[in-house]
Image 1 (cartoon, helix red, strand yellow):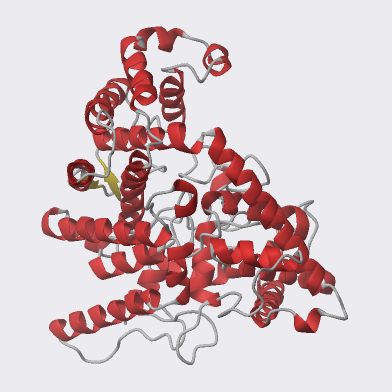
Image 2 (cartoon, rainbow, N blue to C red):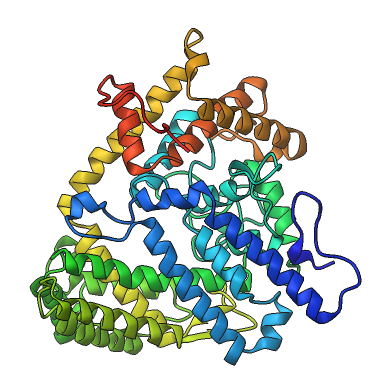
Length: 520
């Protein structure tokens, strides 16, 4: 039995007397089935109406949504996986569990299923609400929500819960293969040298990033048993390919959007890059207080980036390589693409396409493998130069798009909307007179989550604790946790527009009574 093929339903790895060709065909068929189950999921279709950074109405242009981003991540991931099979160290890759391009495609197709309305802003707000309002110690996290969708919330065929995917595909979405707290016992958040994402966030205990809620830890344990050769905090090879592809796509495609929308202004971006290059030595001599005290002045933000990278990733960071990356991005993005304003012409579209294609090709060719990665890296990783270049490209997006006050204004309104929506749904569920008329899917999700918490209380009670540290295993605790997780699961499954409409309806401002459905 190949443990990578195991499904939850029947322990259904392919067994029997097969020759090598038959086994390869059966394996390919199992992974292809997984890919199609994900692509036919309503959670996948929903991504077309979920924000990547801003929605189309806010930008006034055709911008990426979560679905178009996912499609591009899938293409990049398949290209990397195929290249590894052609020119990579296949003996090492096979020893680590393999790198099947279809598994990689499936993981890339699934990687953003857990994103709630309004992108990363929604993720932060739901996390805060889940912990403060419901006492959910692990709050909300998009990667953990993806794993929960694949293994519990979505359905396929006669299965009661989950898409019944192979262990390989379930493992390939575990970018951070630990819970926020409690699992594994040697928790990465408590390590001297932590893996990427494992450091505590600004609020709450445990890791900022993680891939399984407490209720889904048993599933995580089962999946990871198929990969005994992978260290506990490490991604599988197929997962690391998906993660790299996501980084590459994210670093480039949002730049396309905001160049088209006129948000990336050549003058301000050029001033940042040229000033830092010219005064690099002077910036290096400045104190942290001087830099942060006037952080909006040209060059200061790039210097702060240089120091953050040095502090977090000393295993790969190099000052000279960073400077080379700044110069290359400056030449090709700032003085190349952004130097000519986008005017919607064929020539302008061609320039965007050539820029993006050139960088994706370069970064795909910069992928390498290692048998013993540093704790903050994976078995599949970028070369030193490409790693620094991706960091600088992502910096442009953060500094000149995400930090804009006008975007912050929009996001504060969205945060208020989500908080109000959760509050009103909880009020409905705790109304003994009217609870029976609540949306059926909401009631189903609360029942499912409550059952999940009861199962964990029986099998792994040590994982159920309150934010204050006391056990949370009483009947009242389990009911509260189940209601909170069910509400969060429900809200996270909405599209941007559906979240707005549902909040309006609950506040008495619905513009339309009958529709094709209120949620998935």
